[in-house]
Image 1 (cartoon, helix red, strand yellow):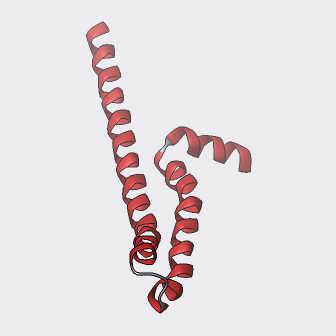
Image 2: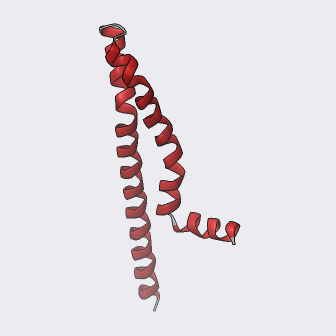
Image 3: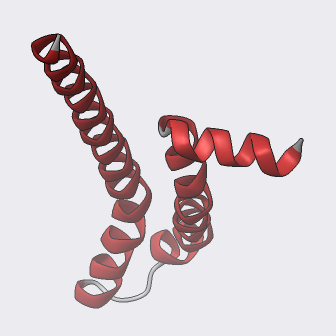
Length: 92
């Protein structure tokens, strides 16, 4: 019986581990996609100088940064069962 319990604990631990890994991959991809444009524009502005390209692209790039900041809580909330349960408890 104890080996059965041990196997269940190991299986649950493995599920939690993969869930955390998937969450970190999603957050990392979101970070790179959201922050790359502003960094590219900044480097372009430093090395080339302010141009129409940097000025026009600035606000959409800033929007992506703010969007990334706003989406992180939702990413964590959708991926973790504990957060889902707590939100359900708060809103019920």
